[in-house]
Length: 312
Image (tube, rainbow, N blue to C red; front, side, top):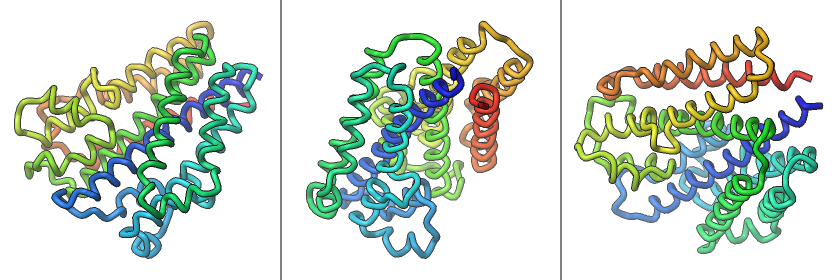
């Protein structure tokens, strides 16, 4: 019974974190695409490659049609990673643990669900109200996060919610940063202008943080540092891994079985890989190989976490 509750809370928070991440990426790209002075192509292909499973030919058909892309990513029922689908999954998880979450949190998830199912949403996404729709969804997503923080009791359920949140956030940071580097053909030694990094920074709520924190013009190295190693930046990989370390210790402290200790060792190797990186090497490392390895290690940790705690 405890495994089922923990599983549902883990995935509830993970789905809602994913929702907020997708909305931030979509909103950032939409705003940049309206800027005629923006550097680089405004095609939606990178976003479609991240958040859909469309073939190259299917992406080619809609990549320059913002309304079609928004419908695919926000309201398309057939897209397993659309906002509508993800929120529906979150709601099902919340429904299954209603006795273990607050009334306010259930209402926040339920409101988000009904917002994604409004009958005229697609019509608005095809017109000038598209950004307004994205903003409404974003506000509801942020409201959920705030309500969870101020109403949920701290305990084992909260620990699993946080594990879901920060595992999802670390994965999203890796995937989105890797996609930006891919667009640069992983050539980090060719210094890029800050405007070319703007999409990544905006997508991960890091633009203002970057301007206030970094003073050099070595944007490639500094931005990779912010995304990976800046311990004060809430969307950096090290920030998320540090939180995972804390909540993972909490959920095993009363039962340190061999399986759970093995899970801690797996996570320890992952954590050390990032924490003890040489900051001076960020701009010259093989970023393609690094992000692939980091993503795979996060998936291995996730699979082991599910096996240890959610096998029922």
